[in-house]
Image (cartoon, rainbow, N blue to C red; front, top):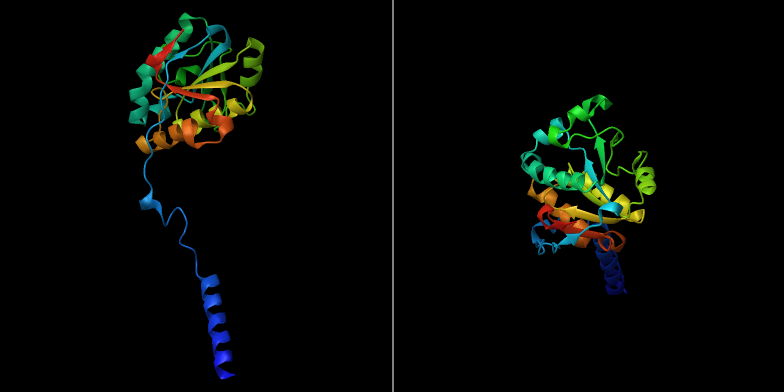
Length: 214
């Protein structure tokens, strides 16, 4: 009898210990075990200028100049901007900063300054929310958007997700968006190209500005 009671008590103690002990099977505990996957594939893209828009998001002097990777991306942003202008594409800008009073003059480079009617003061990651963007694209018959943004993991990723949810195809040139460092850009790229939900990844094409043709 005593042995039975002892066995029951011991089993109960073990159960309490097991239930009371925190699990170590979480991402923080296993952080150092993670293996970086191969990069997603970049693809050459041919776009139809009449149904494609270029979105330049939060590329402001204050924010971009503070990030060396954004400064380095400016020539690529200018390249895709100039191609879009040469093909009379729809171009739209989100402006941020300056206590909500930013203007086109606050955009990082005068060579990519927005024209009248092309910009909107819009914070947040998804630039479709509460802005002129979706009505403008619908009115112009746009089916595909090319996105460049600062930050890559914020405005670019958030708006790409918003675009895919609204039925647009999304082109992400990886050389015209910037994060604080390589890792921020890596996880944004992987999420867009492979790691995110199918509703996103199936509508996103990763490329470079030099791989886009018209």
